[in-house]
Image (cartoon, rainbow, N blue to C red; front, side):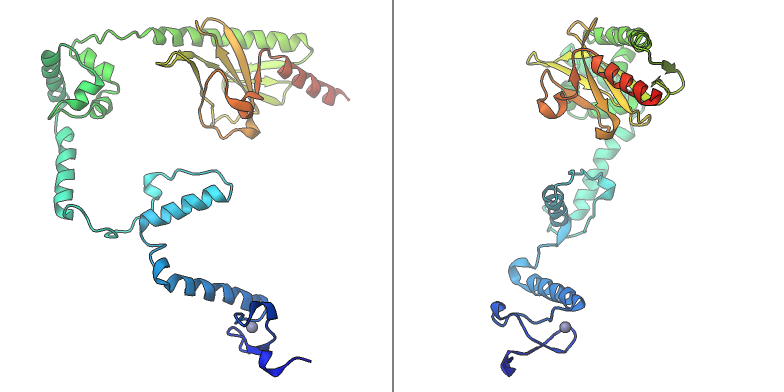
Length: 314
Ligand SMILES: [Zn+2]
């Protein structure tokens, strides 16, 4: 038999209910689904009016901080939002300088590089060259009154172009441009050798010029990217794997070139399903996650294509 004083009136549906004795009288809603929902809302509202929690959701900083936390802790991929997706709230913090002064300063900074003509920018570059005998991105950025190196890059496409226009040879080794050219030449050779090897195994491989993909056994779309070897300042090797997100191939074969960029070092076979389609910068060793896709030869790919053959013939 239930004692009369144990009964409570639900704050949601206004009906009598028997609270769980273990909550020691803190229960204010019954266990109907709608009232459970109302209960949660009620508790959250109570939490928010406490003085220490009042500012928890206030301001763009806080919102983004909490979002970041949630993304990390809900075990999902952390997304960096582009600035146009930021939620902004004006006037949350008291400014260090007055808004009007800030706006005027910003205008001046913008105006500095916008109002200059190409020739005026180049003239300033010439003056800098005369002063130092040489120019570099750092010198440009450090020079007073000169547009930033980013502004030069933006205007002329690349700093080198601006240098060239004032007849300055920075003396940098542009050998990598030559190397890239050589790599592009090597691409068809590697494709041809792949086609040959797959055909020898009884498969079919056709290079599709339009999509720039290798069509293996009329089904598997394979993208082949060559990755130039580069060396960091510290002397270790790096490769950049540029993935073609637009093509969405089934498999990307990333061919890592050796240190001279003349021969093949090894391969990464990257299945399309596993990819996030961001460019990958890889070192000699990259941990298990990536290096399970690393192969010294393409035999694994051939075994894959063979298997597809078998599936089709049986
Ligand atoms: Zn209720």
